[in-house]
View 1 (cartoon, rainbow, N blue to C red):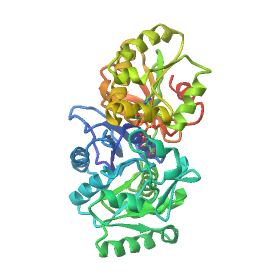
View 2: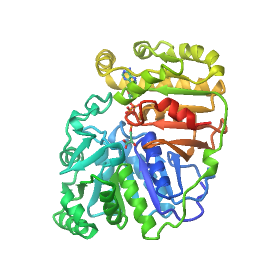
View 3: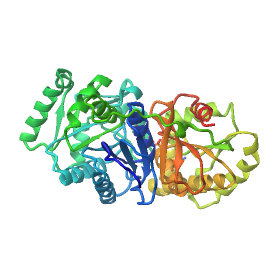
View 4: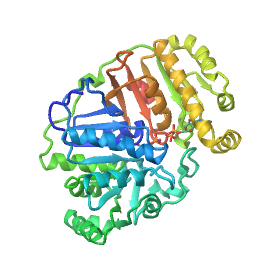
Amino acid sequence: MTVAAKISLGCIADDYTGASDLANTLTRAGLRTVQTIGVPADDLALPEVDAVVVSLKSRSIEANLAVSRSRAAETWLRGRGASHVLFKICSTFDSTDAGNIGPVMDALRADCGEAAVLVTPAFPETGRTVYQGNLFVGAVPLNESPLKDHPLNPMHDSNLVRVLARQSKTQIGLVDLATVTRGADAVRARLAELAGKGIGAAIIDAVFDRDLETIGLVAAQHRLSVGASGMGLGLARALVSTGKVTSTAASSEAGAAVGGPAACLAGSCSQATLQQIANAERVMPVLHLDPDRITTGEDEAQRALAWAKPRLADGPVLIASSSTPDQVAALQARHGRDAAGHAIEQAMADIAEGLVRAGVKRLVVAGGETSGAVVDRLKIPGFLVGAEIAAGVPVLRAVGAEKGDMLLALKSGNFGGAEFFSDALGLMR
Ligand SMILES: Nc1ncnc2c1ncn2[C@@H]1O[C@H](COP(=O)(O)OP(=O)(O)O)[C@@H](O)[C@H]1O
Ligand SMILES: O=C(O)[C@@H](O)C(=O)COP(=O)(O)O
């Protein structure tokens, strides 16, 4: 990859929607940013940038694989001059007691020799705030939010000091909001105190963007941080305010129209996506896949493509596997959680491949794992960031893709307004 100058910020994202969310935040804060899929090949030509977000699909894989892939990404980023690396996790801390946030953090920390790592999933713009180490999603604690029903990593504990301690080899401390409110020096002092006690990482409270700005000023002087887009916001603002980044991100190339047929795929079963699908039924044809047939090996993808192709000339279509929490639990009881998730993701990838072969140039995908499967199948090596559709979801322009110019939107299941699918297509011309 051609990154002429040294990059100011290196990021490793544990899924593709999370990566585009972060790339969006960094771009809006003024950093010229590119999102790559995996560690880029040497011959991938990309523009000069301030930040690179390497997207991995490592959130729900075995912890040791997540560690080795994250380490490879870190080596690449440090090799391009990144003195700070942000490990981007989900703003709802999606993980299980087996990992992968703790194991990856431990490995990256050991590699760069960081004494104590700051960790926060706070992202106030999307309602994720952290107080006394407890994560809130909107008005409710994480364990009472829809994340308690996530198909792959249901979240049952809102206390992140406890959650991370179950995953990590180091002790986990807390930097509370009172300390953050006193400013960067107070945070530095607290972090030094924790490090002095041998505590290797701390959940840090944040409720407003100004808290993240304070956190960013401290984190930017360290080698490693762990967080969601809010941590990215803090770091980006620190890099700009201290003059380490002087560019202004604005990629007109990322916004240019591509035309051609459009389609949407939904594999997220989140409450927000279920509502968005219901609303889309009013404005575009919607096909609901049969998850049982997919999991038992029937060719639902061919049925979906036969349904979609004749409709594409008339406007966008939406194909969804999404079900309610009760239906998801019943399917998983019949077939197993991982087998069901994997089969459905692969069916979505088959459908995406068929749609692109049929000429689709604009594709909206809802769901992090689903987006990972689709983007991998389409063999897209990277993205430039275009207009913001909703908080955390930009229009993406594929770079270096075999199929040429394409626009995509990769939506985290929980993000976006009620009319997300039409909002997205409205900006993807
Ligand atoms: N009807 C269904 N029943 C069970 N699992 C499903 C169903 N539809 C999709 N899935 C799986 O649920 C997971 C959703 O995760 P993901 O795509 O990351 O969405 P989100 O962004 O909401 O986390 C995927 O593994 C997907 O294949
Ligand atoms: O931080 C976030 O919430 C998102 O960027 C994210 O990672 C979402 O993951 P999925 O819900 O699995 O798409």
